Amino acid sequence: MKSIKKTATIVIAGLLLVTSFALGAVIYSRAKVALTDTLGMLLMSKAEDAARITSARMSALVEDVAVVARNYDSQADEATRRAYLQREAGLHDFTNMGILDPNGVLHLQDGKTIDARKEPYFEALQQGQNFASEPFISSHDQALSVAIAVPSTTVNGLGVVGFLAGNAWSDLLDDITYGETGYAFMNNQAGTTIAHPNHSLVENHYNAQEEAKKDPSLNELAKIEQAMTQGSKGSGRYSFDGKSRAQGYAPVTGTGWSVAVCADLDEVLVKVHELERFFMVFMAIVLVAGSAGAAFLGGKLANPITEVAAIAQNLANYDLTVTIPSRLLQRKDKIGQLAQA
Image (cartoon, rainbow, N blue to C red):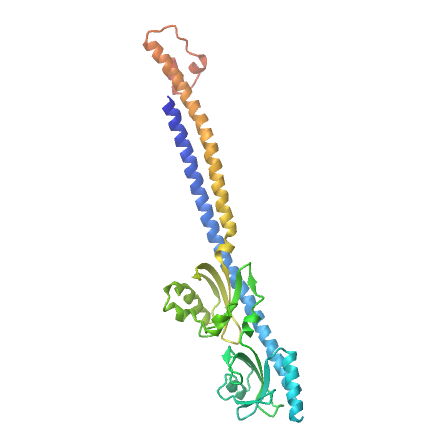
């Protein structure tokens, strides 16, 4: 009869283990999916906030240059005008400032002049429009720069141009983060990175859509960034630098650019991984407790059968003195019927 007890113990413990494992797997899977979906919505919302912040900060830079233009005294002597531009550039953290004349010549604060007709801000000032450039190699110092240009009729020219360091947009997004490892970056309308914590991506004009043509592992990222170039807002998941990431994105009004906020999934899913470890411990406890309970139940089932079998064996050996316990005779189940027989 030991085999009955052993079999019952194994069956009951197995059922408990399988049930616990299935329940844990379902809960873990649903928790992971729910958290990942929620993360996508949170990152998209964060990206929308980042886009609004970026737009406001860019507007503030444009206003800084507009103030310089309004207060520029075109009737002052050259030394005074240059000193004014130098002072304002230092006050507003511009690396250089200049006045663009109608012929396309930029007169810089240090007295140098350059032909700016091929510079990205020239056409905008000709059309009387404010302009904020992508990072580009400026003619005046051959360095990566960002130009902020404002048209003005008070400067005897087309307008005022202020220059920032080439990573100005990266610095603008530097304080926009998510968790411990999440960060923000910005792409232009062609999908080229113009702001990123990794400045080399900006300097090398990184474009995920172009890189995906050489590296298929970037296909998911390329699809997301293609949506960014279309001015869409949304979220997605992809792998980059060996890490699984989630990303939300939103357009920056009036620029054609798009801001994205991304986060490492491993960091975000740490609570789910903790849940996974909890279920492992829980299943171990269930297995131990279930095995003990199964052994007890197996004993409750096997012991009466063992006792009845022993009585039957004695009777088979013509031992008519055997006494059948009343607790067996009073049972209402098959064991009781067997004892009564």
